Image (cartoon, rainbow, N blue to C red):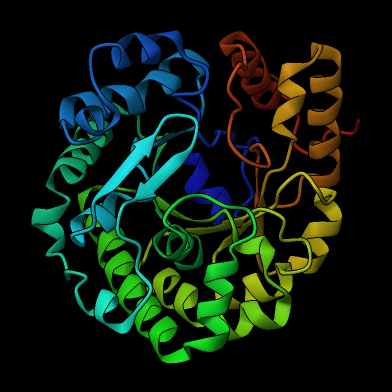
Length: 342
């Protein structure tokens, strides 16, 4: 039997709505925090046994339908020869940003099976320990989001240097996106060969673009990555209400919706030929259970039992979220009848 998540992603009729959460390990689990007291992020990510353990922790505790691999969207960037520091409370920081044709040319083209060997082995371990009805979710960053970190050198909401490069240095931007798309396609391919059942493209910052800029400067390369694997794909971004039709056109069997748009309205923009994932506001888990429950039931009611819905938050689990709240939400979704009405 194929995993429930895989069948839902293919818009097959399923016995219940599958549920998993982005950032479902590190933001809420005490067992993860205990492990991190002994090991750095990169030590965990690059040690197959530790990576597999952290990946499986939320499945054991919450009973979710998927194990999303413990990695960072900058993992393939490190393999490209860039020095990336993950600064606590800040995010990825690069001492030497990528801003010229020479900078792009210096990016290494990794050999995937060797460059990503720890993650590949961790996926094999996880797939071997998971039951058949649960999916392994692999992922990569969206080319625009990763380019944002590379060009800016650190997280920023404005992404002005990125836009200046797009508009003013078209050849450099194209070369960078080509290099990232090729690398990320190979990265996802290695994950699928190792046993990933589904892959997700995280384009967390793409919502800063207009639809026209998205179609011109991003969509062709996201499309190439999403078309490179033969397993179901999820295409996710935040702040993307105006981009949903273009994102669906670029690819993805399932389009991720954030919490800023009602699920049924987002699905109408995506189109009936795609599934959707989402889209409870993760901040609701910080409040009283009654509001969380009402929000989750509203999401399920808007999905109305249509094939193709995967329940998730509109983004990742927030710091400070109680693990018990995440478990309770997963159980609510798992026991709600398909097509539940609020």
